[in-house]
Figure 1 (tube, helix red, strand yellow):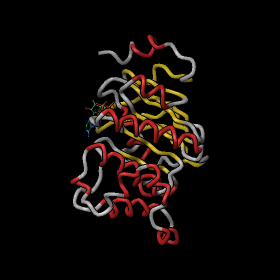
Figure 2: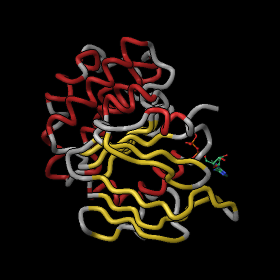
Figure 3: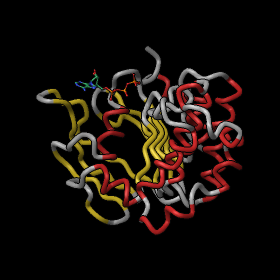
Figure 4: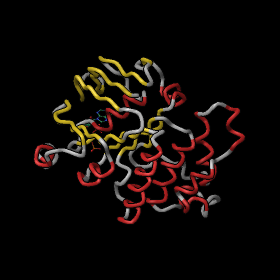
Length: 233
Ligand SMILES: Nc1ncnc2c1ncn2[C@@H]1O[C@H](COP(=O)(O)OP(=O)(O)OP(=O)(O)O)[C@@H](O)[C@H]1O
């Protein structure tokens, strides 16, 4: 469903990623790993359309989206939860969730927030009228993921969703990722620093080092040492 081919991307004159080839099949979870600063967020931003490709193509659902702006990519079904949970602190939980509807056709707005969002994140239902900024870090992360799911993405990009949150919420988020994966209707590209979590949640993985994909494979059969050499500082 997503096919990145020979992608070069960077900032100004400095190139961060070169000749990246990456594929995501429908209904699968793919982990993206690599040391701090190798370009994982940069790759996600280029898939979402926040950074322009300097070379190469990005295809989504069989169509070339390389030149499309971010809002068009969102409407086609690419959801994005950036690092640091980009929720609106002065809006309520409910208002934040309603913003997730914006990528859907207007006719669907009247349906409101689907109930299964609250099944997945029960804590949000109890906090609908609280300000987003008053939530704990883990609750904000759940809100950010829930808001992206309200927009019914076909592909969800999650940038370090477990970062800086308490262990019980890490388990909850890992469980949510597995539940989304089990539905087989949404694919996930997950940036995750913990090798164990990344491999536990994903079907397939890619590792970036020195601007390129250096190893990739199925998470059911992999050589841990071959991956770790690119992750340990
Ligand atoms: N807006 C920017 N302008 C210029 N350089 C940038 C910008 N954002 C990131 N970079 C640089 O691009 C490189 C890749 O950064 P990126 O955030 O994609 O890495 P990352 O793998 O996601 O890191 P982390 O694991 O720490 O989140 C880094 O060298 C970073 O300093």
